[in-house]
Image 1 (spheres, one colour):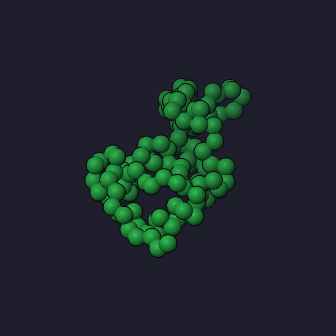
Image 2: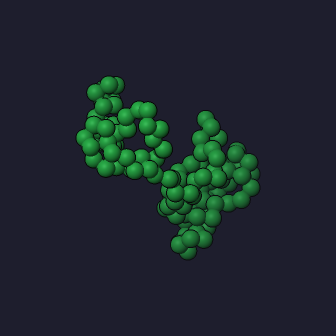
Image 3: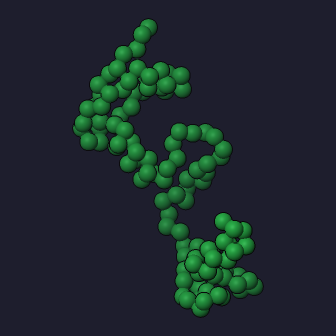
Amino acid sequence: MALSDKTLVCVECGGEFIFTAGEQEFFNARGFSNEPKRCRSCRAVRRSEQGGGGGGGGGGGGGGGMYQDAPREMYPIVCAECGTDAMVPFRPRGDRPVYCSDCFGKMRTETTGF
């Protein structure tokens, strides 16, 4: 059965978009039974709001969605290099120096060249 382009209506913006025959073949090959509900731009916005992802399966990605929406706990430090007050996303143990992001980046560049 030959597929043909379909005009669909986006549930987000209400605009019309084309569900091409090629996209339909892709959906069928992947076993998706539902047509897309959002146009490309609304899908891109939704994907970015959900933290990227999508498309996938490959390589472990995403993981532990339980923590995705929770704000990361930050801890105050005084940079061991420049003395600036900063916040870091881990609890300093006290047995190693802790650096602000600027100094950490400089040290990393000097050490690795990246």
